[in-house]
Image (cartoon, rainbow, N blue to C red; front, side, top):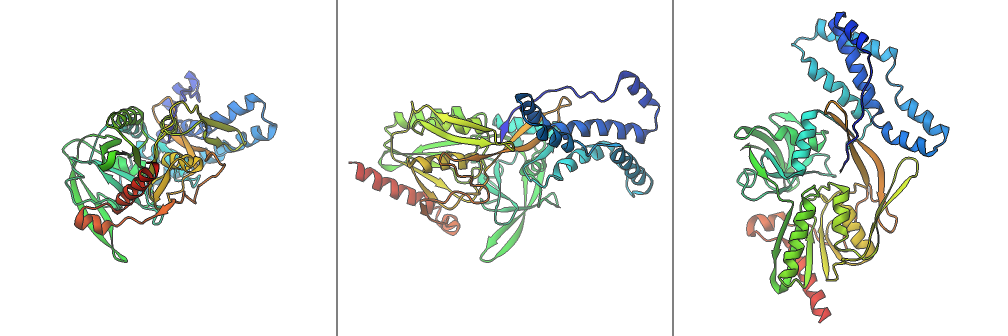
Length: 431
């Protein structure tokens, strides 16, 4: 996910129209305001298109831009009024006008049939920014999307947090939050439901694989303030450094640089980089980390709907220069696949584990002046050798499925053990 704000004024009414609007019936006032903001949400995706038109794109691009905003017209405005009349007159329960408003914006984005293009309220956007800074109120679990089932999945538990002390396990599929099914929801929406005020409980129903069937388990956890480290470092035997990156957030680059410096200061002879369960994050962050590992050349490039290509390159001034093993699994996605894909293309490391998630597209968050935002899929990304792995993933060089039973019973990580074995062979061969 790439964070970038676009602040632009939304002007849909003159001052006189606003005064006249105060005299209208409530339904027409609400419909008018919603229509103006809906239009802003609709053209938010045009921000990039306008930039291209200025560069001299042909008229067909401009036509396509106009068509993309044509959902807002007299007919749809009238229909909104009719629907609101029906709700107010016949719907059994009291209606929260603000919830209806937000639902309209969310519905516009959901019609794209893209799970990664979503609408955020101002509160939801603030939660995202807080999370990227590494502090939030929640349970202390990382969440990704399980490609096989379409459910959100617990990918990692943070030590010394409520989640760590609960009955949750990595690999648990999130079935319900507070009794409400969450299938089909964006992970950010699920996270927003799990997070909450410090000291309050949240009940999650998770599905845990038991042989060929699933057990459904209710887990109630008390929320707390979470300091979310995104990088973990330790030295293993034979001067092998282990660095795990759980997400690529704003804080991750500094944490990675500290870990790498400490590893070198500890006499690191080889590095195991663990990207398992890493759902991705900030494109710029992963590019900067890649510059600490890769030789000179292309890291990744993106292409938008018009074929516009943007390249991210490494100057080659800080290559790792040591044996490297990278752990991946089916929950390694997006930015983690960018890093793993570049390492594989350059042949500077051995990938161990299972095939990654396969998310080869880039999103951008655009903030509106009322504090809300839209996240839109804006481009595809390609590895240095020109591969787009969307829906395919990156295959490991050494495939070894994770043995959850072994870890549960003996607290042994069979994938990490294989990575250590391979690293020791590399180090023996280098002597």
